[in-house]
Structure formats: C-alpha cells, structure tokens
Length: 83
Image (cartoon, rainbow, N blue to C red; front, side):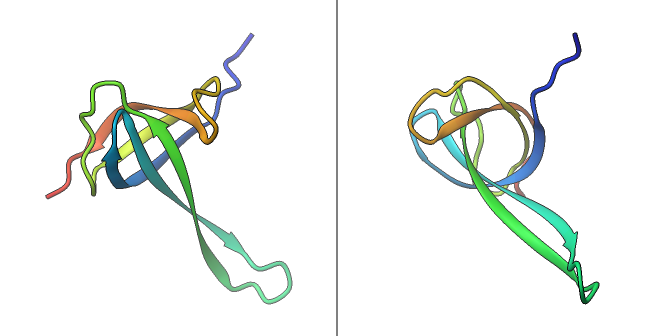
C-alpha cells in the first residue's frame, strides 16, 4: 500500500516553543467565478525533535499521529536555511 500522508513545504514563522515550530504553508487557488489567483496561507504546528529549525527556514513537513492538541505534523527536513 502506498503512503497516504500529506507532505507540505512551508516557511517557519515561529520557533519559540520547545520541540515545536509553526510553519506557514502558502498555496494558490483560482477564484471560481472571477478567475483571480488567490494566495492562501495556512499555519501548522509541527514537531521538531532536535530544535534545529529557525525562523525563516524553508522546511518540509509530513502528516503524523497527533502529538498534542494542535500538533499533527512533523518536520522531515530543512530545505533552505534563513539568511
């Protein structure tokens, strides 16, 4: 069976919690009637076991079992470090 877990790419907006980061994932969607391209931003709390992510890093997150009330994703890898 193939893996059904979601993989998302986003930017870390907060690293102030212990072993948790907030990742903002941006997606684009076309308005159904007017055709305008809308940019939607959704924030996810993700588990960061090693506390390696910093604000501004581009990271890949994957869906996982619930780790707390709001945390349902885990950081897979850091794709690009903040400047």
